[in-house]
Image (cartoon, rainbow, N blue to C red):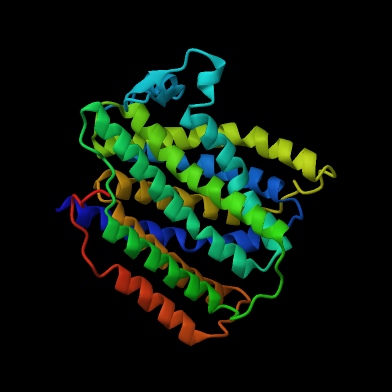
Length: 341
């Protein structure tokens, strides 16, 4: 199968699986402390990702070497370097992955209490554009290290990516058709969460590539990226506990009912499967343009929220128009090696 076709199919699997996560977040977030909720979600995400280590058919499952390579970073010439000083630690994707995973969804929930959730959701769609920009940037750096760039994005596909974002924004706007609450504090928290979400996505993928260097087998890359994702969540857990202690010192947000635990386990399962498919979509093809398929997520999210939660779609026409824009932006078939800017 053509690598670009394979990457597109993996992206469709990722968007289908992960689209139900906002619905599960709605039902599991019952505490006023977003960091307590994020702490529990991290625990269940780690537990549900463990079976992936057995399922991914990698021929190079080197636990000790992968753990050692976590403390590596990309040199200016596009080659992995081992940290030598404490300053080098700040250049490792693994460190920033832990920081990003600690605040990404916690800030999403927090921002939704400060401003209209509609605005927060639209802002968070920028996450994918940020992740693609980081991937294209790393692709250019690796091309300097006598390797074919593993991540390529052309000008035309950037335009289609932005068009997909616009369609996704229209889909989200269809939920209410109006903004109820807006302030700069909420917007800044949402933007910080969006930046963290972009960083969390990409540092996981980047660390997986660092750990597999110089190999390029998709199965090895996915296995190592999953190893990095588990390590990053374990590293993020102390940070979420610290955030809870600093911003919500009452400590009453950690109680959890059995029903909530079951829903968190379900959320972790969907997240594990969706993340697995998304990593394959990035590793099986060099064309980053397949990632614009992910902007179909808001349409599916609205469907699940409308069917199973108390959410009404005030403007069905906007929903149809937005979905049509995203589909239109995905009609142009991606080339395997688009021209770089």
